[in-house]
Amino acid sequence: MHPSAMRTGKLFFDTYGSQLTHATVVDIGAQDVTGSLRSVCPTRFNYVGADLAAGKGVDVILNDPYRLPFADQSLDIVVCSSVFEHTEMFWLMFLEIIRTLTPRGLFYLNAPSNGAFHRYPVDSWRFYPDAGNALVNWAKRNGFNPVVLESFIGKQDEHMWSDFVSVFLKDSHHIGNYPARIIQSMVGFSNATVYGKDGFINLKNPPEDMEKLIASSS
Image 1 (cartoon, rainbow, N blue to C red):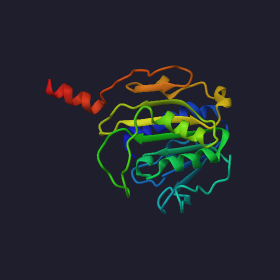
Image 2: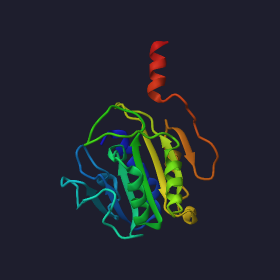
Image 3: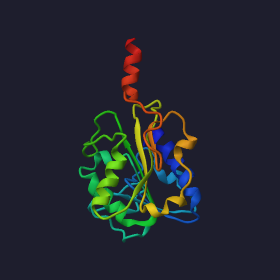
């Protein structure tokens, strides 16, 4: 896991986990290759690492990424970092994640908005600022009522990646349970959305890669 993804995952738990005394957390794509979100998950939470193969940090092996072995409304938090780009039909996994969440449940998604082709075992997608709302609209067409609490594109660090991050709430009726947002304690983000506010915060049309190219050629 690249450093910016780890830092943003910690910010998610610091921001939203502080509202919960107990939680069952499932991390999809949990195998610890270069670090995992287990290390930043609060110790008071019940963390379960799930992945398609056995390995360090994996508690549950998934036989089918589109049929998660968890009961309806049984999970408080699902986190998924650097996985959706490798999931051929990520929209089906998204529905499964929403199904498993309690009405107050949260889904934290981190996926690249740029970066090199990297197969694991495939590399199929990149995610842009409208992706979170598109997933919400897909879930609503399938009978759910989620909302995006916030989404943004993170600033690159020493690595190439610009992370697309979105935090989803299973049922919009519980919006009042989570007043804080990651971007309130973050610097350098762009193209952010916040539930209840129109438009983008720090709107940027050229991605950071393009800005660097323009600056180097001027």
